[in-house]
Image (tube, rainbow, N blue to C red):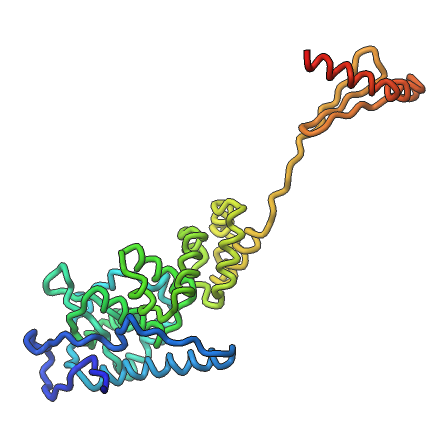
Length: 333
């Protein structure tokens, strides 16, 4: 059976949202939480397969938007962000590039929004946050498709579009998973939104629990850092104080560093074992006897002055057994 389109073809040229009566309850593109993609075999095959799948997903989303439901123009000031953040930040350079593309060629791909569930007359983005930000900078209206979406449909659509079109870093995807879990979404919905299996999702959530959110924010998106390194940082943080690392990253000499460099700085700091400071030995001279006494937390030492009393060390050594027996006897008394 052919999959239903996200949007319906309309020959009308009117710039207005589709009447409520014409909306149906068809699922958004790709929203099938029960489906799981089998893991490809082989590193190269897996990589190529992932790239091909992302390209196909992006093309599919664009095709369905272009073919279907009426695209309207909305004042961007009436549109709020999704209730679940999926980015730590929008790259300023990439945003400026997108602004220039839209300035020159127009907004080719509409964003997807839903009527705001709490505020009448406003909308909420399902996906297209960067396009919305670019249009706001240009001061023009944004082209959008308006759909009635449940919370589940919105987050799955948001996650799948990000997986298909944009390059969210590993830690951004992990934070998105954590935020969805904190809002009570089921594991099936979270896995569908991120396009991952149960094991991969579990590792994402482990990272967000081992590495404090404040430290993740200080490091940033770290686009080149993958799952293995984040897990390594989380493990090393078990034996160090994260606040010390956070303070280092907040220092002036760390501000010019890129996000990837800040991650490597944090990992290096987490890998250092704090130096063990030994308590200085307490030295004392025994009054009237040519012996110096040194003591610290774990041991005690007698130092004999052989110049002042030659042979006294040997004399004491021969009587140690008897002295110890006397000590044990007094201890048991």
